[in-house]
Length: 218
Image (cartoon, rainbow, N blue to C red):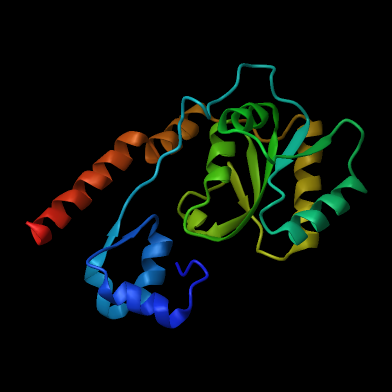
């Protein structure tokens, strides 16, 4: 919401804005709390994930692989993955995703079974969504904005900073996979999630914003 700018400058920018476009209900709530007098200027847009690119893989492609993005809360991911490596069996692997194209990320997510989320106070984190659409079990931080889609059994929330609890939950999920009782992607739930964050819904939200803006600027 602030982008690293000085609070005084940020407040001045918001107060001079004709409209404030947000990306999630969490972001809208933050803006209403920070600038209650500007609540009527807030317009919420939707975003979309390419469900053709981030889609369920063919049967048999999933591996005993855990993926994560180390640039998000690096200290947290370092600790969790360190503890995991002390307890992982040789048949499971950890893979950080970094310096990859969008298509390369999609392919890696299609091979992994568990994705670790280290989202940090984000308006709406996309990596957990992308991982969910490719059939991963998501464990980790919602980043607050992600609470709007964070539902079991696809997503399991860990409170930010609970490193021990985080690690133990992952190990429990691994034991379930190994026993044949682990998370199985539900195509219907994934289709609903894909629809919720589809290009169609994004375009519709932008058309509504355009109508409201046109009424002011016409």
